[in-house]
Length: 249
Image (tube, rainbow, N blue to C red; front, side):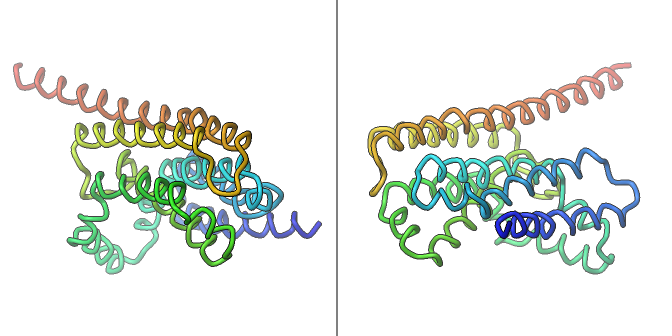
């Protein structure tokens, strides 16, 4: 009973602020609220309940948490457009200040597709090819820091690539596409590496199953991101074609 109570509380803490903000706007699309709720579910089951507990000693459960926390939840949250929602309910002065911050050199650096990719995929390589994976299971502080990084890096990476939410520093479609392709390659190579080189304290059987889950489960989410990115390109081409037609009339 205690686990279910804590799980419900975590879900409410994540979901409630967004739903309340959506209510304040008066006209916020229901689908975006559903996206946020789905993301909240992903995070909730990643940090509470049997799956989160099992991730401490079972690599397959750990990899499931990795997919939910680092890939699925960030995708759902980006689709929910929380930054746009926040800007709509903030006082004008605060919103303008936030927009100025988004154009600083630090924001330009951290929001660049290459930087976000290195933080996301590079962090995973660091986790699984060094003693960090073992340290994560030896120290709860390291455990929390690693999981926080996995989520934040995953969210930043997805936000920068898709640019569906507020992003005044949106990179070109071609650059984001190249970074996405290289990131997918790096993610898949890591999955194959884990298949043959289990981390410390992980059995060969669990490593093989977890690596396959990382490869194929991650591939589904990557395919969704590719679809959205291609759709963005298609809509941009449609607008360009219309402008050319109107200019020629």
